[in-house]
Image (cartoon, rainbow, N blue to C red; front, side, top):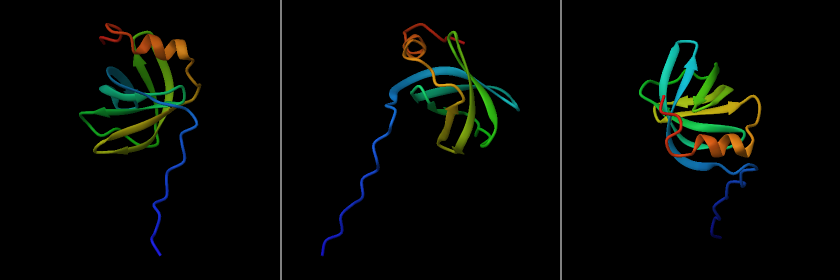
Length: 102
């Protein structure tokens, strides 16, 4: 009998793949980050230093300031979940060229 690979369930909220610079305000200070993907519910980010898991942060990109929680962090990056879902206009403004040169 051949084993079948289990597929991961589809995400309820689609993420937009991007490569954008932003700022993450953590309990240890502000860090420049790269946003790898973003959705109304959260984002995948990377930074030069490992981000502290389990802490509250503020993600800043352009005019967006989103309160979030770092739910997972390792050497490859971190996943943040927003406390309030962003609307599509917020995400569209965040990914516009020239926005967020912080």
